[in-house]
Image (tube, rainbow, N blue to C red; front, side, top):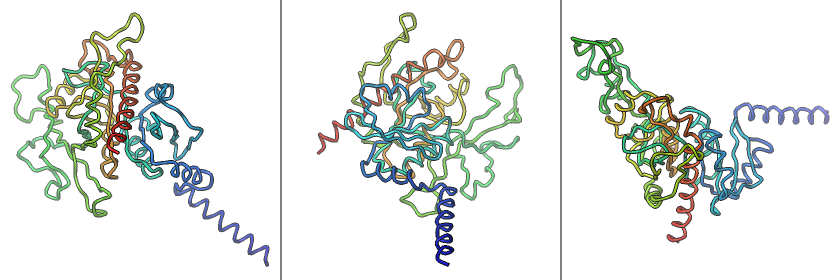
Length: 350
């Protein structure tokens, strides 16, 4: 009888652990490592899209790794120090979904005092150049649309607009304005008609559960943005090798806005439209997801993006293949210097 009871108890423990693992809960060794990591925190979280953007930081002389690495839910969390600031690095993978999931995991698992997201981006701003590093004050996800039916225009209410699900406040792209070799056009001359930009539906931790809010332009942390002003004049990489150099001296620039979508933008017409419509500089695929998660979790964040190409605005083929390494190196240098300024500011404020 005693053996049967022991077997039953062990079986129940096994089933509980199995169910916890199946439901995504951290158990066993992983749970112990997370608890140990949090006793050493809080950390500055560094969120990075890809390995080619992470590797320059891993090899930067200012980054001091520890022997702690935690693998969880397909992500690898690396722990270390930059200028005595404890940091945890994690790679998201490509596009908005991966970036959002990774950011939520980072904030849910670990004690994070702030987030720095960095990488490369396309450039929509004619006053900036390849190799420059842009630090926007606001981010938006510009691929959440209400696609209007043929025949309707700006005066027509969108489906479910009356319920507050959609809005005409932000504006639209009229696809027919980009037709070529067309004459005698009327106001509804393209079956694709209009796409209306929409704000994200969000549920902040400081709000009421299941009571939705909406936001389009997500602000970065004002203190972080002010610190970024101190990075003006920072010397950045200008040459890939002795034969391939930029035609200008790259700079760090705080800019008004950046935009993200799970779309690789390499189209001059849309580049021009989105710049003129929204006054955006970097255009890429992850930052708005990081911004939206940090906003909902009430976590300070900033985004640093080095410009690797002109998003379709160049004279020939896309420039990223040539300048991707230079841009990644410049983004890392700005991140390191930002963290040093952040540490210095903390000491001055103390």
